[in-house]
Image 1 (cartoon, rainbow, N blue to C red):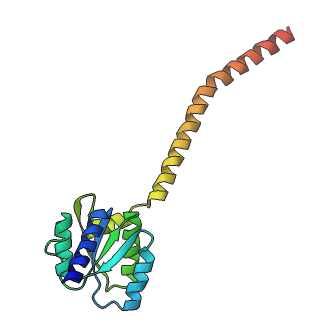
Image 2 (image 1 turned 45 degrees about the vertical axis):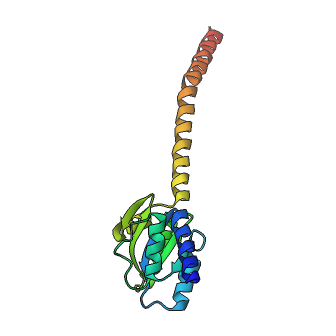
Image 3 (image 1 turned 30 degrees about the vertical axis):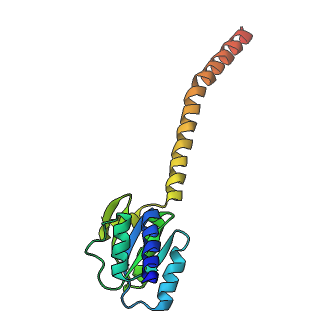
Length: 170
């Protein structure tokens, strides 16, 4: 009994401390495949396999209702502490290679996500790519601004040079 309470407390802490959560069904996957999946997402998430009743209790303790009625069959949850987009991509890619992994739903920023919304999340660019694109846009804007500010000065210099050349020729 104490072991179950400790497991529930640990799961509730993971529910409460995660950026995002993805519920999956892993029916038919081997231990080696689960180990590979855990390793692939370990930089951004932990992948926990637990009894559905314990997951229900832990989710309720953490105030997460996104998975009510979905904790059926062999369930495992990815508790995301890093980039949710990166984890969604890795789960999608793993599911393509191992069709027995089924993404059932998710939870992000206090909102429940359907399996399709988790797939859309996987289709987003990663945070690093988005930041790089934003930096490129800002850099281009700065170059445009510098050009606009320098253009009148350059034109004035050309006008003065033209006047000086005209005076020298007279």
